[in-house]
Length: 241
Image (cartoon, rainbow, N blue to C red; front, side, top):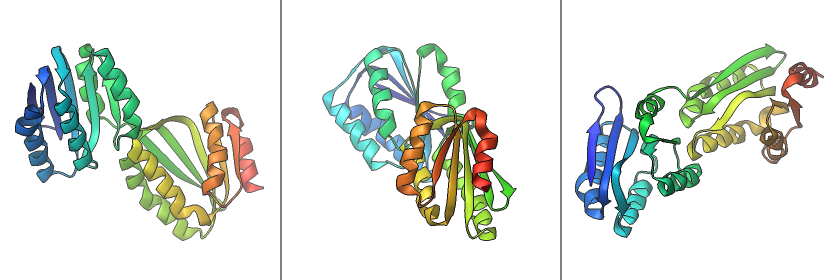
C-alpha cells in the first residue's frame, strides 16, 4: 500500500510504504500524484518512508518503479529513503550513484533528519579572483547540480575579464558530488572551458582527489598538478610560476 502526503511549505512529497506494494498502487496512487505535482514545478523532492509493516514489492511494482524513474529522469531534485529494511537500504545505496539526483538513506528514527536534509543546502562553490589571471574555486560539502548552475555566471564573468586563466581547485573541504546530475554538471563545466585554461592546481587531502589529477589530464588541455592540503601556498606559487 502507498500513502502520500505533500508538504505545504516545501516541494517535498512524502511516500509511505506498508504491506505489499503492487503495480496497482503505482498506477492508481503514486504515478498520478507525481505527474500532477510536476505540472506545477520542474522538480520534486521526495521522502520515501518504509514502515515496520512493509512486506515486499511485487515484481510488477518493481517494473512500475523503474518505468516511473525513467519517465521522470529529470523530475526529481532530491530523494530521502527512511527505512530499517536491510536489503532495501543496500539496494538504494548501490544504485544511488546512477540516479540523476542526490539520494540519501536514513533509519526509521531519523525522519526529522531526512526532512532537514531534503530542504537544506548540501554544499556550495566559492570563487575568488586572486589576480594575475588566477581563479581560486573552492568546493565545500556535497555538491549538487543546482550549485553549478548558480555559479556558472560568476565563472563566465571572470572568463570575460581574462581571456585565459589559471585555476586553483580547492578540494580540502569537498565531500563529493550528490548524484549523477552533479557529476555531469561538473564535467560539462570543465568541457566548456577546457581550452581557456593554462594551468590547474588541485589541492586536497583524500587519496581519490589525487586520482583527479590523472583524470583531469584527459579533459583539460593544460598541465594539471596535485598538491596535498598542507601545501596550499605551494599550489599558488606553482600557478604563478
